[in-house]
Amino acid sequence: MAAASLRFFSGNNFPMEPADLGARMHEHIRRLGLMPPGGEVTVLVSGGADSTCAWHLLRELGYRVSALHVNHGLRGEESEADARFCRELMGAEIVDGRGGRTENELREIRYGFATDRLRATGHTASDQVETILYRLVTSGRATGIKPKREDGVVRPLLPLWRDETVAYCRAHGLAYRMDSTNRDTTRGLIRERILPLLREIHPAADQNLLRALEQRPTLQPALAELISSPVGSKRLDLGDGVQLVREYDRAWLERGPVALEGPVRWGDWRIESELAGLKVRGWRPGDRLAGRRKKIQDVFVDAKIPRSEREAWPLVVRGDEVVAVPGVVEHPEVKAERVAD
Image (tube, rainbow, N blue to C red; front, side):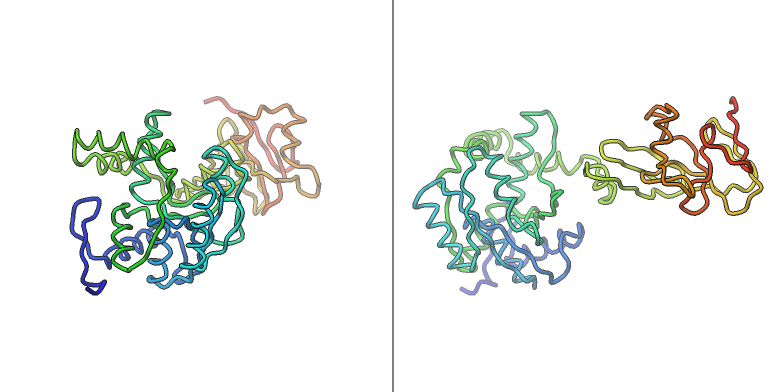
Protein backbone atom coordinates (compact mmCIF):
# COMPACT_ATOMS: atom_id res chain seq x y z
CA MET A 1 0.00 0.00 0.00
CA ALA A 2 1.36 3.43 -0.91
CA ALA A 3 2.20 5.73 1.97
CA ALA A 4 -0.20 8.40 0.75
CA SER A 5 -3.16 6.01 1.13
CA LEU A 6 -2.42 5.03 4.73
CA ARG A 7 -4.59 6.38 7.51
CA PHE A 8 -4.04 6.24 11.25
CA PHE A 9 -5.53 7.63 14.44
CA SER A 10 -4.07 10.64 16.19
CA GLY A 11 -3.74 11.26 19.91
CA ASN A 12 -7.06 13.09 19.61
CA ASN A 13 -8.71 9.93 18.26
CA PHE A 14 -9.44 11.39 14.83
CA PRO A 15 -8.34 9.50 11.71
CA MET A 16 -5.49 11.40 10.11
CA GLU A 17 -3.74 11.24 6.78
CA PRO A 18 0.09 11.32 7.01
CA ALA A 19 0.04 14.48 4.89
CA ASP A 20 -2.00 16.22 7.58
CA LEU A 21 0.91 15.99 9.97
CA GLY A 22 3.05 18.08 7.65
CA ALA A 23 0.33 20.73 7.42
CA ARG A 24 0.02 20.95 11.20
CA MET A 25 3.75 21.14 11.68
CA HIS A 26 4.09 23.77 8.96
CA GLU A 27 1.36 25.93 10.53
CA HIS A 28 3.05 25.64 13.95
CA ILE A 29 6.41 26.68 12.50
CA ARG A 30 4.89 29.54 10.48
CA ARG A 31 2.72 30.90 13.28
CA LEU A 32 5.56 31.05 15.81
CA GLY A 33 8.32 31.93 13.33
CA LEU A 34 10.45 28.98 14.40
CA MET A 35 12.36 28.62 11.11
CA PRO A 36 12.82 30.58 7.90
CA PRO A 37 11.07 28.91 4.94
CA GLY A 38 13.37 26.36 3.34
CA GLY A 39 16.13 27.20 5.81
CA GLU A 40 18.83 25.00 7.28
CA VAL A 41 18.12 23.11 10.49
CA THR A 42 19.95 20.43 12.45
CA VAL A 43 17.70 17.90 14.14
CA LEU A 44 19.00 16.44 17.39
CA VAL A 45 18.17 12.78 16.82
CA SER A 46 18.13 9.90 19.27
CA GLY A 47 16.99 7.28 16.78
CA GLY A 48 13.50 7.11 18.31
CA ALA A 49 10.29 7.57 16.35
CA ASP A 50 9.83 11.22 17.36
CA SER A 51 13.17 12.61 16.21
CA THR A 52 13.23 10.30 13.18
CA CYS A 53 9.81 11.65 12.18
CA ALA A 54 10.99 15.24 12.72
CA TRP A 55 14.07 14.66 10.53
CA HIS A 56 12.03 13.10 7.71
CA LEU A 57 9.00 15.40 7.88
CA LEU A 58 11.09 18.59 7.83
CA ARG A 59 12.81 17.32 4.69
CA GLU A 60 9.42 16.62 3.15
CA LEU A 61 8.45 20.23 3.90
CA GLY A 62 11.45 21.54 1.97
CA TYR A 63 13.88 22.39 4.78
CA ARG A 64 17.59 21.68 4.39
CA VAL A 65 17.97 19.17 7.17
CA SER A 66 20.99 17.60 8.81
CA ALA A 67 21.09 15.35 11.86
CA LEU A 68 23.20 15.27 15.02
CA HIS A 69 23.29 12.40 17.51
CA VAL A 70 24.79 12.89 20.97
CA ASN A 71 26.06 9.56 22.29
CA HIS A 72 25.92 9.65 26.09
CA GLY A 73 27.25 6.10 26.28
CA LEU A 74 24.88 5.14 29.10
CA ARG A 75 23.79 1.76 27.71
CA GLY A 76 27.01 0.29 26.38
CA GLU A 77 26.55 -1.52 23.08
CA GLU A 78 22.93 -0.37 22.84
CA SER A 79 24.13 3.27 22.80
CA GLU A 80 26.68 2.43 20.12
CA ALA A 81 23.95 0.73 18.08
CA ASP A 82 21.77 3.87 18.38
CA ALA A 83 24.64 5.96 17.06
CA ARG A 84 25.24 3.61 14.13
CA PHE A 85 21.53 3.62 13.32
CA CYS A 86 21.38 7.43 13.23
CA ARG A 87 24.49 7.66 11.08
CA GLU A 88 23.31 5.00 8.60
CA LEU A 89 19.66 6.14 8.28
CA MET A 90 20.02 9.90 8.59
CA GLY A 91 23.69 10.56 7.92
CA ALA A 92 23.88 11.96 11.43
CA GLU A 93 27.01 13.52 12.83
CA ILE A 94 27.94 11.57 15.98
CA VAL A 95 29.40 13.43 18.96
CA ASP A 96 30.60 12.13 22.32
CA GLY A 97 28.29 13.30 25.10
CA ARG A 98 29.61 11.19 27.97
CA GLY A 99 29.99 12.59 31.46
CA GLY A 100 26.47 13.40 32.62
CA ARG A 101 24.69 11.54 35.39
CA THR A 102 21.38 13.29 36.04
CA GLU A 103 18.73 14.13 33.44
CA ASN A 104 19.57 17.83 33.79
CA GLU A 105 23.29 17.21 33.27
CA LEU A 106 22.63 15.11 30.20
CA ARG A 107 20.32 17.79 28.82
CA GLU A 108 22.96 20.49 29.29
CA ILE A 109 25.55 18.36 27.50
CA ARG A 110 23.15 17.61 24.65
CA TYR A 111 22.26 21.27 24.08
CA GLY A 112 25.90 22.28 24.32
CA PHE A 113 26.64 20.96 20.82
CA ALA A 114 26.13 22.75 17.47
CA THR A 115 25.26 26.08 19.06
CA ASP A 116 26.36 27.87 15.88
CA ARG A 117 23.30 26.67 13.95
CA LEU A 118 19.53 26.33 14.19
CA ARG A 119 18.67 23.14 16.06
CA ALA A 120 15.40 21.26 16.43
CA THR A 121 14.24 18.49 18.71
CA GLY A 122 11.52 15.88 18.37
CA HIS A 123 9.44 16.88 21.39
CA THR A 124 5.75 16.14 20.81
CA ALA A 125 2.40 16.96 22.41
CA SER A 126 2.82 13.76 24.42
CA ASP A 127 6.07 15.10 25.88
CA GLN A 128 4.24 18.34 26.57
CA VAL A 129 1.54 16.55 28.58
CA GLU A 130 4.15 14.68 30.63
CA THR A 131 6.01 17.92 31.32
CA ILE A 132 2.84 19.77 32.39
CA LEU A 133 1.94 16.95 34.77
CA TYR A 134 5.47 16.81 36.20
CA ARG A 135 5.61 20.57 36.80
CA LEU A 136 2.12 20.69 38.27
CA VAL A 137 3.12 18.06 40.82
CA THR A 138 6.59 19.44 41.61
CA SER A 139 5.91 23.19 41.49
CA GLY A 140 2.16 23.75 41.27
CA ARG A 141 2.58 25.58 37.95
CA ALA A 142 0.97 24.51 34.66
CA THR A 143 3.98 25.24 32.49
CA GLY A 144 5.29 23.20 29.61
CA ILE A 145 7.93 22.87 26.92
CA LYS A 146 8.68 26.10 25.10
CA PRO A 147 8.33 26.00 21.29
CA LYS A 148 11.62 27.92 21.22
CA ARG A 149 14.24 27.82 23.94
CA GLU A 150 16.28 30.86 24.96
CA ASP A 151 19.30 29.35 23.20
CA GLY A 152 17.35 29.10 19.94
CA VAL A 153 16.50 25.37 19.95
CA VAL A 154 13.06 24.91 18.35
CA ARG A 155 10.38 22.25 18.81
CA PRO A 156 8.51 21.93 15.48
CA LEU A 157 6.81 18.66 16.45
CA LEU A 158 4.83 19.99 19.44
CA PRO A 159 1.41 19.86 17.67
CA LEU A 160 1.84 16.11 16.98
CA TRP A 161 1.26 13.18 19.35
CA ARG A 162 3.69 10.34 19.94
CA ASP A 163 1.45 7.71 18.38
CA GLU A 164 1.30 9.89 15.27
CA THR A 165 5.09 9.96 14.90
CA VAL A 166 5.19 6.17 15.28
CA ALA A 167 2.46 5.77 12.65
CA TYR A 168 4.27 8.24 10.36
CA CYS A 169 7.51 6.24 10.55
CA ARG A 170 5.65 3.02 9.79
CA ALA A 171 3.76 4.62 6.91
CA HIS A 172 7.05 5.75 5.34
CA GLY A 173 8.97 2.55 6.05
CA LEU A 174 11.29 4.28 8.54
CA ALA A 175 12.87 2.10 11.19
CA TYR A 176 13.38 3.60 14.64
CA ARG A 177 15.03 2.65 17.93
CA MET A 178 13.54 2.06 21.38
CA ASP A 179 15.39 3.35 24.47
CA SER A 180 15.34 0.61 27.11
CA THR A 181 16.11 3.09 29.92
CA ASN A 182 13.08 5.34 29.34
CA ARG A 183 11.02 3.47 31.92
CA ASP A 184 13.64 4.19 34.59
CA THR A 185 13.28 7.97 34.30
CA THR A 186 10.77 10.32 35.94
CA ARG A 187 9.21 10.88 32.53
CA GLY A 188 8.98 7.12 32.08
CA LEU A 189 7.14 6.77 35.39
CA ILE A 190 4.62 9.39 34.28
CA ARG A 191 4.27 7.79 30.85
CA GLU A 192 4.01 4.14 31.90
CA ARG A 193 2.12 4.33 35.20
CA ILE A 194 0.52 7.70 36.00
CA LEU A 195 -1.03 8.70 32.66
CA PRO A 196 -2.69 5.29 32.12
CA LEU A 197 -4.38 5.69 35.51
CA LEU A 198 -5.53 9.20 34.64
CA ARG A 199 -6.99 7.88 31.37
CA GLU A 200 -9.05 5.43 33.41
CA ILE A 201 -10.54 8.43 35.20
CA HIS A 202 -11.19 10.20 31.89
CA PRO A 203 -10.23 9.02 28.39
CA ALA A 204 -9.36 12.59 27.34
CA ALA A 205 -6.91 13.12 30.22
CA ASP A 206 -4.02 13.91 27.84
CA GLN A 207 -5.96 16.48 25.87
CA ASN A 208 -7.33 18.10 29.02
CA LEU A 209 -3.87 18.44 30.53
CA LEU A 210 -2.69 20.05 27.32
CA ARG A 211 -5.70 22.37 27.37
CA ALA A 212 -4.66 23.58 30.83
CA LEU A 213 -1.54 24.99 29.19
CA GLU A 214 -3.29 26.34 26.11
CA GLN A 215 -5.85 28.27 28.17
CA ARG A 216 -3.23 30.13 30.19
CA PRO A 217 -2.96 33.82 29.24
CA THR A 218 -0.39 34.15 26.48
CA LEU A 219 1.92 37.02 25.60
CA GLN A 220 2.87 38.26 22.20
CA PRO A 221 6.21 36.60 21.26
CA ALA A 222 8.24 39.83 21.46
CA LEU A 223 6.89 40.60 24.94
CA ALA A 224 7.44 37.03 26.16
CA GLU A 225 11.02 37.11 24.88
CA LEU A 226 11.73 40.46 26.56
CA ILE A 227 10.44 39.24 29.91
CA SER A 228 11.91 35.75 29.85
CA SER A 229 15.48 36.57 28.79
CA PRO A 230 17.63 37.77 31.72
CA VAL A 231 20.54 38.88 29.55
CA GLY A 232 21.37 42.49 28.68
CA SER A 233 18.86 45.26 28.10
CA LYS A 234 15.83 45.35 25.81
CA ARG A 235 12.88 47.64 25.17
CA LEU A 236 9.53 47.06 23.47
CA ASP A 237 7.13 49.69 22.12
CA LEU A 238 3.67 48.96 23.56
CA GLY A 239 2.03 51.79 21.63
CA ASP A 240 0.52 55.11 22.73
CA GLY A 241 3.96 56.42 23.66
CA VAL A 242 4.63 53.71 26.26
CA GLN A 243 7.59 51.34 26.21
CA LEU A 244 8.42 48.32 28.35
CA VAL A 245 12.07 48.34 29.33
CA ARG A 246 14.04 45.47 30.88
CA GLU A 247 17.58 45.73 32.20
CA TYR A 248 18.79 42.32 33.33
CA ASP A 249 16.36 41.24 36.09
CA ARG A 250 14.42 44.53 36.33
CA ALA A 251 11.61 45.80 34.13
CA TRP A 252 9.61 49.03 34.03
CA LEU A 253 7.20 51.02 31.87
CA GLU A 254 8.54 54.17 30.29
CA ARG A 255 6.76 56.97 28.48
CA GLY A 256 8.14 57.80 25.09
CA PRO A 257 10.06 61.04 24.54
CA VAL A 258 7.86 64.13 24.94
CA ALA A 259 8.75 67.29 23.01
CA LEU A 260 9.68 70.10 25.41
CA GLU A 261 7.43 72.64 23.74
CA GLY A 262 5.81 74.48 26.61
CA PRO A 263 5.63 73.12 30.15
CA VAL A 264 5.95 69.32 30.50
CA ARG A 265 4.77 67.47 33.58
CA TRP A 266 6.76 64.32 34.29
CA GLY A 267 5.91 62.65 37.57
CA ASP A 268 6.64 65.16 40.33
CA TRP A 269 8.53 67.44 37.95
CA ARG A 270 7.45 70.44 35.89
CA ILE A 271 9.98 71.20 33.16
CA GLU A 272 10.19 74.20 30.79
CA SER A 273 12.66 75.56 28.25
CA GLU A 274 12.68 77.92 25.29
CA LEU A 275 15.47 76.01 23.57
CA ALA A 276 14.37 74.24 20.39
CA GLY A 277 14.76 70.51 19.80
CA LEU A 278 14.63 69.33 23.40
CA LYS A 279 12.64 66.35 24.66
CA VAL A 280 11.91 64.77 28.01
CA ARG A 281 12.21 61.04 28.50
CA GLY A 282 13.20 58.40 31.03
CA TRP A 283 16.68 57.07 31.69
CA ARG A 284 18.11 54.44 29.36
CA PRO A 285 21.10 52.22 30.11
CA GLY A 286 24.19 53.74 28.49
CA ASP A 287 22.93 57.36 28.64
CA ARG A 288 25.73 59.92 29.10
CA LEU A 289 25.87 63.64 29.79
CA ALA A 290 26.23 65.80 26.69
CA GLY A 291 29.89 66.51 25.91
CA ARG A 292 31.09 64.37 28.78
CA ARG A 293 32.05 60.76 29.34
CA LYS A 294 30.13 60.42 32.58
CA LYS A 295 27.24 57.97 32.54
CA ILE A 296 23.86 59.03 33.88
CA GLN A 297 23.89 55.89 36.01
CA ASP A 298 26.99 57.25 37.77
CA VAL A 299 25.29 60.65 38.12
CA PHE A 300 22.42 58.95 39.93
CA VAL A 301 24.84 57.06 42.17
CA ASP A 302 26.77 60.22 43.06
CA ALA A 303 23.51 62.03 43.83
CA LYS A 304 22.34 59.09 45.95
CA ILE A 305 19.18 58.64 43.87
CA PRO A 306 17.69 55.25 44.91
CA ARG A 307 17.60 52.61 42.20
CA SER A 308 13.85 52.33 42.64
CA GLU A 309 13.44 55.97 41.54
CA ARG A 310 15.88 56.13 38.63
CA GLU A 311 13.58 54.66 35.98
CA ALA A 312 10.95 57.33 36.66
CA TRP A 313 13.42 60.25 36.80
CA PRO A 314 13.10 62.65 33.85
CA LEU A 315 15.99 63.49 31.56
CA VAL A 316 16.10 66.44 29.17
CA VAL A 317 17.72 65.36 25.93
CA ARG A 318 18.71 66.64 22.52
CA GLY A 319 18.93 63.62 20.26
CA ASP A 320 20.80 60.97 22.22
CA GLU A 321 22.61 63.48 24.44
CA VAL A 322 21.41 64.28 27.96
CA VAL A 323 21.58 68.04 28.56
CA ALA A 324 19.95 68.15 32.00
CA VAL A 325 18.93 65.87 34.85
CA PRO A 326 16.34 67.82 36.88
CA GLY A 327 17.39 68.31 40.45
CA VAL A 328 20.84 66.86 39.80
CA VAL A 329 22.51 68.34 36.70
CA GLU A 330 21.20 71.79 35.81
CA HIS A 331 21.20 73.61 32.45
CA PRO A 332 21.00 77.42 32.40
CA GLU A 333 18.14 77.43 29.90
CA VAL A 334 16.15 74.55 31.34
CA LYS A 335 13.86 75.24 34.28
CA ALA A 336 12.83 72.23 36.35
CA GLU A 337 11.01 72.22 39.66
CA ARG A 338 9.29 69.68 41.81
CA VAL A 339 5.62 70.42 42.28
CA ALA A 340 2.98 68.93 44.56
CA ASP A 341 -0.18 67.35 43.15
